[in-house]
Picture 1 (cartoon, rainbow, N blue to C red):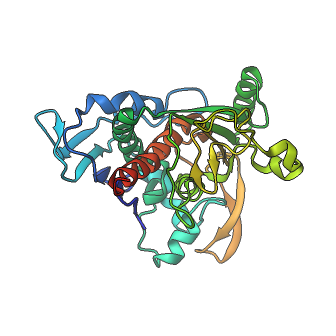
Picture 2 (tube, rainbow, N blue to C red):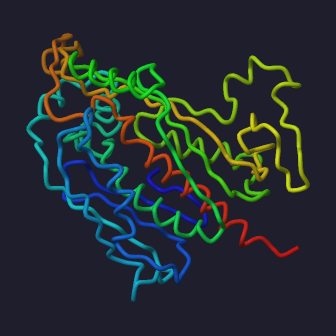
Length: 333
């Protein structure tokens, strides 16, 4: 449901226009140097402000309310919260009767019989990922001990893969009162051989589970991905070039049989266009019982993919930290 992980377990809570959002992280090893300031670099990367992102301005100031004492983690559950302040809940009043096409408004209404918090998307809002970024920043601190480094970057927006084309795609979407999607690639270097628990807890399986939990993610591929279906085995196979498992190519994306093989883990996620757009649309009106015109009010991203890389990094760190702690708990050989 709202919890994920085994040894490094995260539980998210809050709504977009509620008093606060946050996360509880259980399983953080004791003794890790940590303060709220250590979370701010990644949180700043998630913030709005760039062209194509929402005009909503939140401080996103993290408050660590448990699990840290004297500048070090205690081993107890660690809780981070963020206050909400810049809310305009009235912008969402019409969406009770007219759910946004492509959004969770309709399914949330049906599943919870209208008791869901619809303001700003409630618990389905991308704002909930604040806690994920915080938990990811903490996981990165733990993974530093293993020598693991994680980096994600945008490789495509609106079908364009060059900087000028991506910028133009965002600008055109803004001019058209529309939105565009994108592709984010993530690389994890330094992952040792042997992480992963096949069959159902393979590295690909758990990473995919985490990635699809990020709002707006609609696809995940590893290594050569779907291109592998158009390759021959002689092309796709990665020749092993050294005793440590280093391969000449990395079409497998650093994973064989669901287990990390020591090469960089490489995968990509597809991010859909933001559902909330200012351009008039049609949707069913539950108040009138007819399809009606809808103009979405509020402040929304024209390209949510612009803010996704740090969230992908965070989810990756959460998953790999969990695998690292599982590996450390295995009996010595």
